[in-house]
Length: 277
Image 1 (cartoon, rainbow, N blue to C red):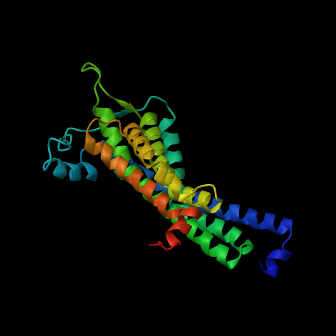
Image 2: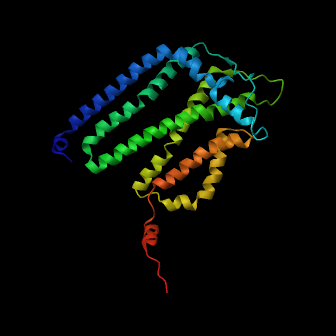
Image 3: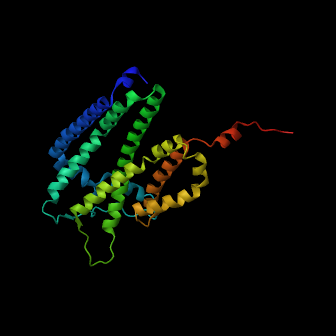
């Protein structure tokens, strides 16, 4: 640790933390204003896009379903369109504000990670800086990948299934604005958080809590749990919809297994030469 860091008092650290929070809040505030200005356009072309048959995922799945019509549901219908209504007087205004904040949070996420790194890096040794830098970069990338999969795959598939599901032909589906937005934000953020699983497993491995043998021992159990989780996220009866959610989750499981440390006994057995007669 450098002499400059040692000479910093508690109040110096507190002052640095105050400026870190101040810069982060200013960045969020500026981009929230920009998001508020452009939100009407973004809302139609981005947020509400999965509610129409022209969404890019449905077009791709339509081409795939023509090759295997017995395995996939019909994605080629142009009649799919989500009709949305608003019950509360102030819902549209508050939705405008909250989505502007979420957009600002998403855009400034790399900068917020940088501010965290800038605050903690002076207190780290050189070898610790390399590890933490890699962790923050990896965690940020995986969060964006998870959010992208949530928007491009998980939410549209869930929306299309639930909106076209009919318990009775006499019931007409009309989604409220609040219901649509709650599911939109929840599924995208949940997928972003789920994709942090490899990072969490790596951290637990560094603390000596988690070993690679755990993943080998419970792989069969994990497959069943991930299938149930995929079925819960996309409650559809066709195998394709289930698989498009299951395989990314299983990839995360295998990636987590690769990132954690091996057991000490396992490493010794691998290094020990084979004795022959």
